[in-house]
Structure formats: structure tokens, C-alpha cells
Image (cartoon, rainbow, N blue to C red; front, top):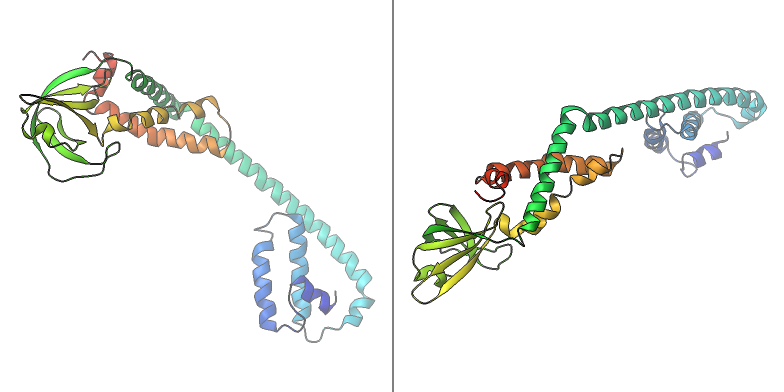
Length: 283
């Protein structure tokens, strides 16, 4: 190998300093080292890089002896190269088999045992909630009596309405509704709450005075994002039906198990929704 060939292999101009040669070698070696890059061709180039640096950093190197002994050196290099390629291929196959084994074991841990049983419960409950919230659009509403204790003067941006304000109800506690101070400023404190059939989710608050009845929608609440929840609760069905060793499966599995599972648990254990659901909305 001539000095010109060594410079080309290192992608350096002829006459580069020793410091530049060492810096470029370290840069290329980090990418082509056998412990980092399993490609046999990369290993071969790595070997040549080492030889090129050795030649360039040797001030006593002469190209004539290289030409005289090139046949013997070439024969030795070919044998060494074949051996290194064989070892590199074995190492690559071993790493590939280990990675496949780890992937299979991880996939099995997700789709068997207690964890998979919990996932199936999350999936089924999510589907029930999605179906219940969908049919609530077509079912009659419940009407519950409550008392309006007070309202906040501050305004906020809501999800379905531009201006919302906080109110406090005697039975249901604190909520946000569309800002309409005239709906309760001169109205009686007794109000009627419209709620959905299955989950008893507040939809609107009815207030009355001596002349007018007002219907004020609730906001910043589960009822204002019902449509999004209906779609979200269908997500666990995808990993259940398509059990594949893919990144999509792993992503939607964990989204369903930890994210949607947490939302489902919160919905069921708060405000007696699990009782409402078990009694089909009658209680």
C-alpha cells in the first residue's frame, strides 16, 4: 500500500500532519470497529485503516520494499482477512440470535400470564365504556335536583365554549359551565342537572327565575370530551387483534395498558360511575 493510497483511504489530503492523521483515524475507527459495526466489509476497512496509519506515521517507510514483498504480504493479509471475516460473521450471527431471543421473550411477557389477563380486562371495559358513551347520545337524559351555592367571577377558556366560569353545587361540588351570569344572577338557587343515561355525566344545568328558564352547558369536564374518549377507548382493541412483534404493537400496548387503563380506572372509581354502569344507568 503506497502513501498516496493510505491518504485516500483516510480521506485526507497528501501531506497531512501526524496529528491530523491520528484524529481522522480515531473518527473512522469509532464507526468501523468490530465491536461496534458487525458488517464484515467494515471490519476489513478497519484493518486497512490500521495499516494505513502505521505506514503514514512511520518516517522510515519505503515503498520499494513493499513492492518487492507485496506478494507474500498480500497472501498473508488475505488469510488474515478471511479469518477476521469468519469471526465477525459468527459474532454478528450470535448477536442477531440473541436479539431475536430477547425480542421473543419480551413479546411473550406482554401476551401471556397475569399481565395479558389484566390487558384483556382493560380492553373489554374500554369497549363497554365506548359503547355506553356512544349510545348515550340517543338515550334520554336523567334530571337531578341540586342547589347552586355560588359562582366565580373569573373567566377561563373552555373546551367547547369560549368563556367558562366556575360554580359550586351542593351535591355535585365544583364544576365549570359556560359563562352566563344572567342565567343565575336573578334565578332561584334550586337548579336541575341534566345527566347522561349510563354514566350520569353532567351535560347542562337548568336555572329558572320568575319568567325564563336557562340551560347552561357544562364545560371542561368528561362530558365535553365524550367523543374523544369514545375513540380513545377503541385503541386497546388494535393490539388485541393484531399481536405482532412490531413497534406499533408495543406502542399501542403500553398506551392502552398504562394510559387508557389509568383513565378507565379513574372513571369507574369516581362519582359512583361503576354503580351507574352496573345498573345500566338506573341508579
